[in-house]
Image 1: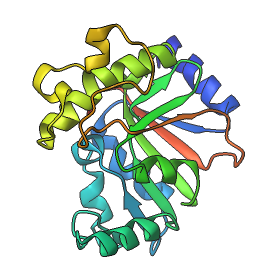
Image 2: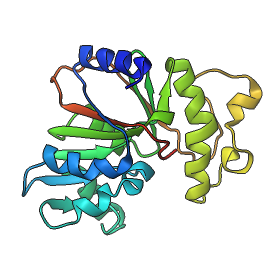
Image 3: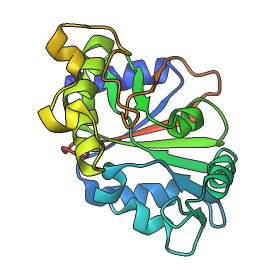
Image 4: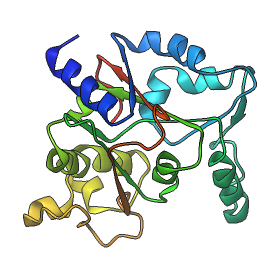
Length: 216
């Protein structure tokens, strides 16, 4: 393990966040199965990293009570009920938009259901994070979302946003360093912002860092 990652793990532990290290994404499913119990209620936020690691398919294997966001009725009321059930899950899976060297987790949402679950609700939050998401500090985390994560998410989902067309948030072009600045599109992916530092419940949040480039 690199010295940089060893130092990051030390900071995560200081923040009561439990870190795990894997060399390859192929090892992820085995570790996840060790972290879960048969019959657990599990669900996930949107995450390319989880798909790339085969974790979504594993959650559908029948061992768990999987609340499938993709199969949920998309009517406003029914989808809201699905998201509320997710808040009481035994384990909530997602990635993190960035992890700072100080052991902070930085996440940005459109609907805020993912950052709500990270903050409070599910008994366990399990984040699967590629090494490409490690940044020096919050300023770099903000820039990463504005120039990498948000543009690619908006392009993937066909959102009508400035960053989808240009590959960068309009605030970057304008020289505006404010975290919440951006376009005025109602389809923008950057509406709510969460910096997760020290955790009150030790090891509730788990970070599985994989030594590969994953997701956005």
